[in-house]
Image (cartoon, rainbow, N blue to C red):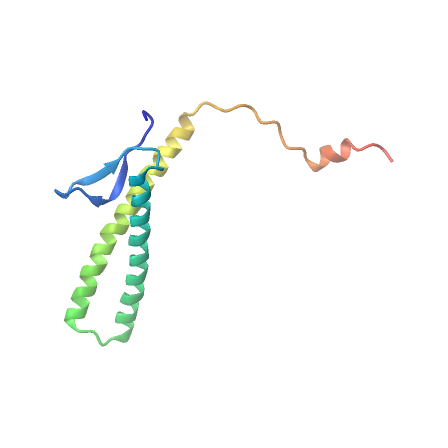
Length: 122
């Protein structure tokens, strides 16, 4: 577990601080975080549709615009948190790949030219 990278979770601690989990990404909390992130992104998609419909109608009230603004701001916070979490994990993965020692040499795949050259003459 020494190579575990902290993952920013899509929810905060009870006192409003960022919440993290350590692990390889396959545990219960990580799977729950994946599900919450997917739900947040799906809700954001629906909110985009609602916002476009509301704005296209051009018959909104100030209360509707206020509610839409509040919902868009909340969704933007959630989506930004998902993006930050995923970006952090991608950077950690890239660093691990760069730092990893090279694996065993893999022989090159045969090319068509090699295959033709190794065929018996007619």
